[in-house]
Image (cartoon, rainbow, N blue to C red; front, side, top):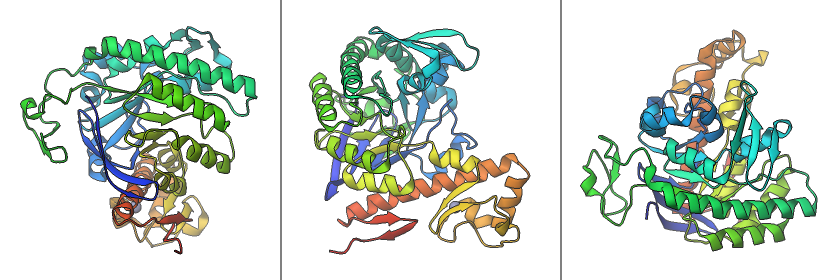
Length: 405
Ligand SMILES: [Zn+2]
């Protein structure tokens, strides 16, 4: 077994747990910052560690094009290449390839697509997407799926869901036959190594401290598709579970559908996923949404929103959203968020952040991103704490509240 998941406490459908991966033990529910090209834009790795990021995302499509998976493999995989010794998850590249709707051709075998960088032609199949992800060496990798567009008719949603099920079986077969090619088979020096008593993590222990039942290799998650149809989602979940994975993701959401529909599909899909396995909701959402989904029983989430919004001057605070470009902040001496303990809020005024943004300074992007990531990571810390207390908190417009009994 290369992944262990332990649920410590539940509160309604929400769960607090710990996910043990080869590189780190992760407290769940967890928010995973997105590091598309082996970089969380604007934030150095030591700062990410300081902010408490436990696991970050890498993007197979982008890394495959640049610098290329062989380069990353030769550097010891993503962990060695980007000097990150905590956990990493890579997506399969499916979502990015399917967003290139003008530049791709789909067959049963896989997808031919054109690079957004230079127009060159490439081919991804379940097998080649697994090969690329094994070379990148993330702790958790994803099956190659087809992300169904929205809106789509019933026939299209079914055909797409069935293709994803067949590709999931091919992904697993290739992964099982090749997973030992992961680029970090040898001990990695001062990494985090879990001890025999799952739960205690020490730094720099020799590899021998890992119990033999814990295999130091990657884990492959399956992805549930089925568009916006609840029956197809159920069928997709059942077929994916039948193939068998150590964790399950809900894909194909946040593709333009109304938020109420996203929630409805998430809630109904969760009912069909095994309770004892981690559940990962892909590409979602606002601070309010990540709290809501964690309370529904989602264990892992990722989203480009905190980092992308930060680069556009949109900041999430305990008092609601702040658009730092606005003239009202020109002489505002207050901190960005008086309830935030991040290094940005502790040190700089809104006036200075507004000035940096208006002057198009690189520092604006760095500081804004540090604050937004802190806000997301702190939000998840709060959710974990509230589940521990057995209390379900809601989070609306930046304000935490407990629903009336
Ligand atoms: Zn802050």
